Amino acid sequence: MTAPRQPRRPVPGPARPAARRARPRPGSQALRLGNPRPRLRMIGVGLTLVLLVFTVRLLQVQAVDAGAYAAQANVNRYIPVTLAAERGAITDRTGVDLATTVDAYDITAAPDLLTPERAKAEGAARLAAELLAPVLDEQADVLEQRLTANPKSKYVVLARRQTPQVWKKITELKKQQQEKANRTKGVNVLAGVNRESHSKRVYPNGDLAAGLLGFVSGDGQGGGGLEAQLEETLAGKNGKRVYAQSGGRQVPTGDVKEQAAVPGSDVELTLDRDIQWAAQNAISRQVTDSAADRGYVVVQDTRTGEILAMANAPGYNPNDLAHADRAAMGNFALQDAYEPGSVSKVMTMAAVLEEGVANPATHVEVPNRLPRADRAFADDIDHPTWHLTLNGVLAKSSNIGTILASEQLGKTREEANKVLYTYLRRFGVGRPTGLGFPGETPGILAKPGEWTASRPYTIPFGQGLSLNAVQAASVFSTIAGGGERVQPTLVRGTKGPDHRFTAAPPPPRTRVVSEKTARQLSEMLESVVDDQEGTGTKAKIPGYRVAGKTGTSNRVDPQTGRYHGYTASFAGFAPADQPRITVYCAIQNPTRGSYFGGQICGPVFKQVMEFALKTLQVPPSGSQPPRLPVSYDGRPAGSP
Image (cartoon, rainbow, N blue to C red; front, side):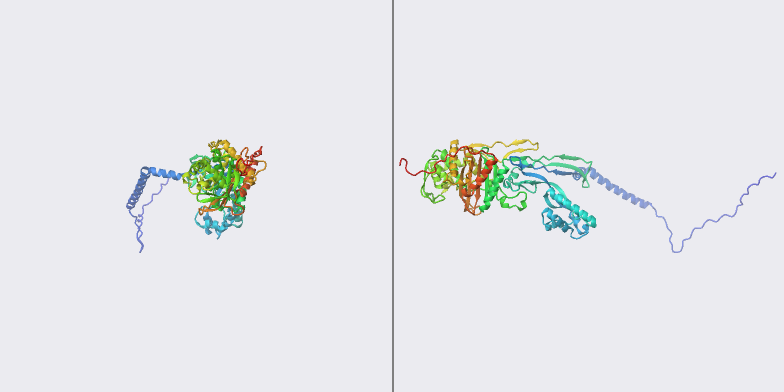
């Protein structure tokens, strides 16, 4: 058996020579790695400096200026928004709106969307202006100027306080333009037109009582009339809303703090809309027919002092202030001071009767001329010597007879002046009416010591003193009310946000003359209208006893301060036996036709009074007028 073969060991050979280093090629340079330590030191120093700057800034923000930055952050984070209060309505005595507030919109646009680069076409702004012009009732050139004045702007107001109907039309236009742009692959030039919600004051009856109501200015505040006078009551109190924002948008989960706005209170006036319409219609027509400067009518409830109508002509539409005549934007029934003329004689006669120096039947011999002071006084017509009763002096409106009657008020002219002045003041001449209306005039009544030259003789018949139309109406309401003056009122009460009505306080009452004097004077005023010799026959109303007085006075021209033209007027009340309504009419500077008060204001009085009596359902008179004697035969007492 042979033994197994052992593996053969390798025979050691000669050792492999070591690899040789490659020799650098001619022209090449050997690469060597730089020492990294210097670079690491530089990087370390840089990082240290950066961290040091951050540390210093962090200390400044969090420690030194922490309060200032926190406050600034809050300012930028929380946005306050004013919540406008709804303005209260103004209504007539039956609750009919005379002034109210509706939703309105400011129409805005983004001019930068209409540049040639963005619109990809020339004339985009012009096209947008032409589309919007008829809807906004504005010139296309004006709108184009607003759209191109600042092409980079993202916001411009094209029109303010537009109605929802206007916005609806714009929305339809935008839709049409978008459909067109989709078909033609063009650009909708109205895409940047938007709205901002606001409110707008509107006057549903147009120019009705505009002079009294006034208007609201562009900033939402009363700019005249009752809107300005009752601003605090009507305006309410604005609220506030504060919300968190980021990037110009409200944060949905952010805090919101809101203080609700408090609406203004509604104001109920004493006006009756229908009677106001009748008064305004009548005076507007007569001012036009007479080519007069202007005129006014005041209607007052004789029992309560409430003003039922206060009409001015010409007027204006507070819904369209841009086209309103500034000269007509006032309530001249309260703001004009003028010499009343013969309607003022009723106050002189009241003083004569109350002082007991004469009665309606007292004989007064009236010559054609009466020399006093520096002139000879006359009546409106030449006449032979009249033999009139005191009643006849008033019925025929004799200036001379009135002077003679007034001289009986005192032993001397100075004493008579003081007595007459006292009664004029009691009737309210030279005093505020109590309405507190903006721009109201108290009238002009000099003190008796200043009645020089002809004044002691002109004031008794209504020249040389001035008043406003409401004061004149109040004089006749005082006689109708039995000699007690009730301060005129315009506001019946208010209704707050809780819808509770709060009545206005009752007006003050002042005794001016006795009931006996008032009754005698009322019967004398009936002769002015009822007697054939009276000057106010055009004011007769079938079925009603009417007491009234005409007036025709020289007028002071406000431009020159001199007498020029006339003031025609008529004042009265009905039914004379059970007085309910006073109507006063005045027309300034009539230049066409008659200028006598009985001729042009008498018919206005009749038209307005008839309408008011029917509206208030006042029953006809139940008795005949007394028909006091106007004249006497002139024979001495006791002669056949």
